[in-house]
Amino acid sequence: MSLEVINLNLIKKNIIQSSLSFGHTPPEILVVTKGQNQERIRPILDSGHRLFGENRINSAKEKWESLRKAYPDINLHLIGPLQTNKVKEALNVFDVIETIDREKLVQAILRLFPSAKRSVRFRIQVNTGEEPQKSGIEPKKLVTLIEFCRKHGLLIEGLMCIPPANEDPAPHFALLKKLANRHKFKHISMGMSQDYHVAAMLGATEVRIGSAIFSD
Ligand SMILES: *Cc1c(COP(=O)(O)O)cnc(C)c1O
Image (cartoon, rainbow, N blue to C red; front, side):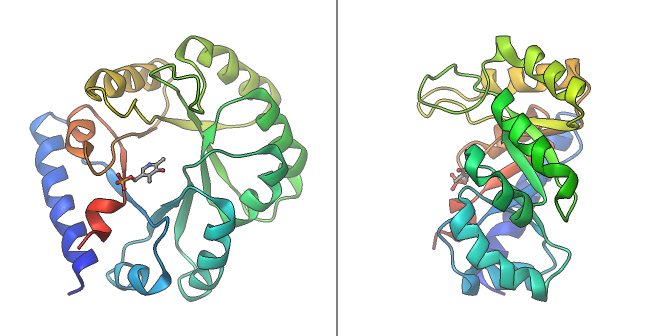
């Protein structure tokens, strides 16, 4: 078995323990493949895993267009910021866009969405740490953005966050969970290689993991 698959299986085991001991359904694992080539991704696909994430459109497009031909049922998520001039490409490359964070972006998507070939699903990124340099909507502005999406017909299915780098992630995960519950969102995308167990204990439905799977 390849190292990537061994790592993934170990993480799955850890996650099941963390989430079940806190009464949650174990989250799905989004395997983050940014910076990884097809040779390192294939063993994971061959093991049956189908859920993947990338943070840049250009590199994802090259890598995943051919992989999608071989594995048509992959589920590819955009987890990095999205510029309005890249919306068309994003709608063609990704199955889920997790980083909706402003009205302009919603409008750009709605202009193209009726003609987009595949059906894409959407989540809102919340800037739980209110960091000025980071994308994501501030928690206090979330309601307005959700209402904007509802009014204009963009269905939002979940929330995602990236907590500040040098802080305890737990309060951020707890806040995201609370916001998701309040708005009855099904999907809560939080937790990465360093803190996925914390996210699993706090009710993540999806953890996004890269380096813990691909590091040797
Ligand atoms: C890179 C990235 C991840 C994965 O980070 P690791 O620490 O490598 O697990 C998760 N989410 C986002 C948004 C990322 O850009």
